[in-house]
Length: 493
Image (cartoon, rainbow, N blue to C red; front, side):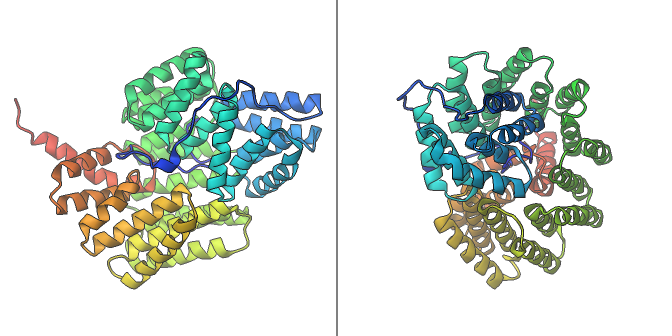
């Protein structure tokens, strides 16, 4: 299944225009050929853990989670099993509890297991610098371990660090040309850099290796959709649904129809997808996607109705970040600025309530709320916007989260554009180059400073953005209309 919403996800929006910063580099120096140990005294727990890893690599996430939960019951002191339960669950209470247990047990494990725990728990607690150092040490210690490559490659993709992911995953596939899990991820790394021909080739290999599995078709469908090949994407998604209706590819069908402008059909598919959810987090995520279909149809009241239901479901089930997100999303498309600011106050209030939220989730969502406040207040409530920028800068000074860093740059760029300081805005907006809202401002800033070639490049990126996000729904349709008009008025040879 594609990188949607279920596992510590921070989803990218569009193809990147600019290279990743130096802090995102990974190191592939070779110092060992050992495999990562798995410390447990229970044969049954080890068997369950290995089964869960196999299920994860085939993207049967619910089955993997069930196996790892069973492994912790077979051996309560099994640190990696606790860590992987935290990695796979979308229940905030369970994630926090299992991460804490893994950290408590870490000292009883090997050096490699301690590094893995330090890395994955560190990024969830906002300790990015030591966490990334642990990740690099882990990769250096086990350069030939396929599962280490898989876990690190997957995280790099979630972080939109496509170049680094590609470097790692190409090495993994070179070492084992039949490593289906690495081939899948490498396809996403190529797609993230808009190298779709290579991405399609990886997907063809992936489908050939696992023809009876639903995920190869699901992944192929997502990458085809990223490339704007909607009809072909639907063929692959429906092939996945045929193989396993409960796998989740109905959501891919719905997302693709939404991008095609077939909003009622998309809503029908979202309703079908809701029949197969296994958690309230998944339900709230699908409801949020469904609300976006009404935004595309310019029916904000209906979108509000769906999102308020999603917020209510999130609140009832202790999903604090999802509840805050629902209010923030409403603020993004709300036509009245004052009403939008009230929605943002509701979002912030939710974060300040007693919810089981890990620091990374709380800080990332707070950064997004502050950025949205800036984008809505920059023109008419300058003092409020400037205060939010200052708060974001304070966060960015100490928090290396990609979301926090991008939110600060996006907010700084937005307020500089509002002040007509276009040249100063450009480098900030370039840092948030996968967000259509920032790209729209970057296009404006390039035009205002006479950089028409760069503006045309941004316009092309926006017209080709195919991620199913609210930002895409708010910005991209206009740029596609402009691109179509340009094509129609182009002189015929």
